[in-house]
Length: 226
Ligand SMILES: [Zn+2]
Image (cartoon, rainbow, N blue to C red; front, top):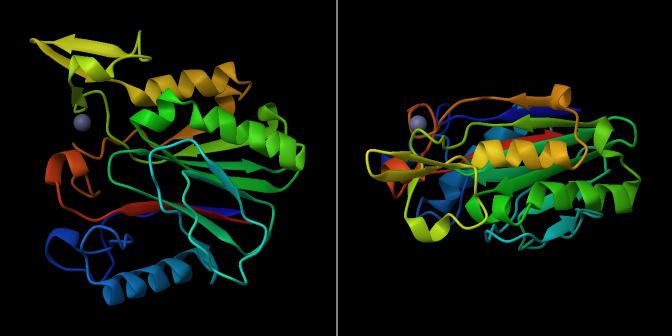
């Protein structure tokens, strides 16, 4: 298994997308994004990259075939195919990568506020159980840079479901989606010792794209391959 989280450096994009933008939906030049994706292929040593059309939902796509590329409208990908890199694009949402070394299955998950509220990580682990016979206690988790509760200010109306993960400071409200995601995984049977957390806030740390900080901007990614 190989995995990586990219940052905003080392690509070809310019301006707001400087420079390693991997997303086609943010207004960047598609030819340059294709070059950046080719650079990602080199970085992870895999020609078959599978991206999602991410929609902040909780649907999961099983990758069984990469010979006919299709648009996968979902927020999680799972596979047990070798040499297929599952990719999740983010700029504040949590990029979650999973690996079960017993059954040799992997996943890439886009976990934003909606996804975390819908427990998309636990649902993906369930899908790995049903599809490949994975056990939650065998799964290794890799969490990339994502917006921290230091910066994720929200309005009261989106705090439903996050009771216990809301921080009040000087009249403002902040959400801790990462802690909720971690607690839900552990409740679902994942061992805390198997969780590797980058512990980097995208909004504080300018090496990463941040939608909250920059508005129109690029996307970095998490990618995993068997
Ligand atoms: Zn921050």
